[in-house]
Amino acid sequence: MSPALPRPVHPVAWWVWALGLAVAASSVTNPVLLLAALGVAALVVTSRRGSSPWARSFRLYLWLGLFIVLVRTVLHVLVGLKFGTTVLLPLPEVTLPSWAAGIDVLGDVRLEGLVRAVTDGLRLAVMIACIGAANALANPKRLLRSLPGALSEIGSAVVVTITVAPQLADSVQRVMRARALRGDTARGIRALPRIALPVLEDTLDRSLMLASAMDSRGYGRRRLVSTGTRALTSLCTLGGLLASAVGIYGILDATTPGWLGAPALGAGVALSLTGIWLGGRANARSTYRPDPWRAPEWLTVLSGIAAAVAVRIVMVSGDAASLGMPLDPLSAPALPLVAVAGLLVAALPAFLTPPPPPAATRARSSPRGRAGSGHAGPAGATVANRQPAGGATS
Image 1: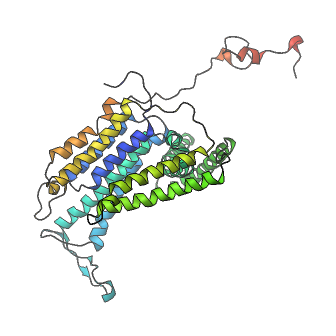
Image 2 (image 1 turned 135 degrees about the horizontal axis):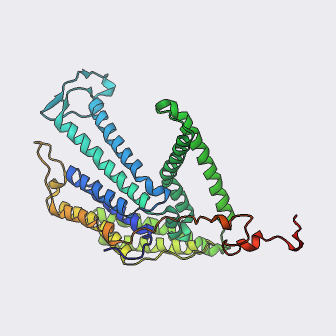
Image 3 (image 1 turned 60 degrees about the horizontal axis):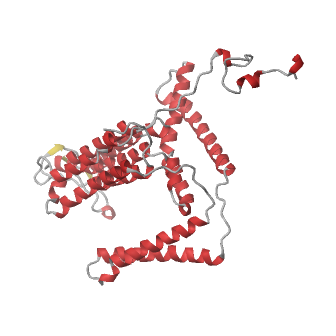
């Protein structure tokens, strides 16, 4: 049961949940599991998205995923590797010169190869839908506020990048509503200039407003730090990145000494965190009412990680074939219960996290409280509507 008081879930929790679901989908070509992951993402978005403009952007990511599947299928028909025994569509094959050997244009479209192309496209589409779910659930402004001070500039660039689609969707909806109010019923290619130009103008206006707001709030202001502190910050950051790279290589390569694995990775992470902490001290910013991190956030994070861990367990347990689509011979996909259970756990935030707060509504002022009335208005309105003593007006 959801808590009684609505509140937004921490944006970092939503992004960790979405990345865990995307990692689980990246290792799967089983259409049953992919559709299950897509259904989980859609369920959570439908249940826990707010009323902000970016909350309505999930549909754009779904259309983008459908476009990717169609493009992947068309490319397979045109230049893809044709394999299998069941011919669906006999097409002539175009012979290419010797310098383009290995590329087949057209040719017989076979069922097995076509199924492989569709499942590969579906996998990428589900991963994009998971990122779209995080973008629809997490407030990008609150996400930027949650980042460490040393990553504020990078975070601003990332937030601006990921909010392009939501802001574009909001602009298109406003333009469409304005056209409907004016009685403009043009459709198709004829309506494209009437929609594209106002959307471009609105985008430029928003960019200027954002720049003005950031400048008025002192964005980019830094405290004075000593040369030694600046050098120590750079040394910790660079050393942490190098040690992390060496540690990852040591973990992946079994022939390296043991101290090049987890110990080097741990030291690199520690140095990187130290560099981020030192760099954040130079950023002169404050946070008003930071977002809380409570039990719903931990539940969201663990549910997303559970989906990725469940798929990993199936892979290492010797049943990795059940995660793919059987093509030789073509048969119905298997149903690994562990992976299905992990995806079902990822759907828990739709039921066990707080509902989003309702949309803010503007209080309608009564006719008595409008200009020219000296009574029945809100506090301060009566004083504002009074005239100076003696009836003189200026």
